[in-house]
Length: 67
Image (tube, rainbow, N blue to C red; front, side):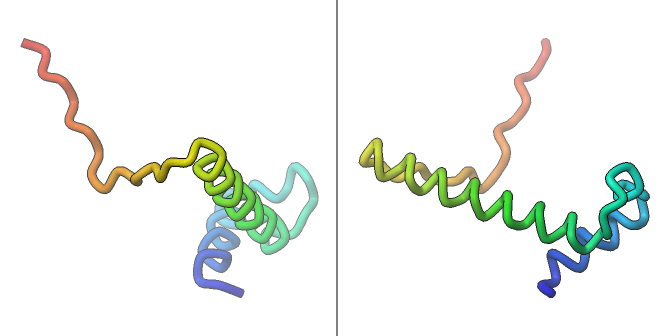
């Protein structure tokens, strides 16, 4: 079990989010990680389709000032 999966499992258990589906928290954590992997694969496929490399944002954009 990866560190991320362990942390997700702990959080899911702490929040009792596994109760609604009656699914063990470690299975839900594994599912969530697989969803992230599928999303990452989809974004790579999108980049190949468009023929460009989208650069991740390293710092969040600044909020506009309301003067």
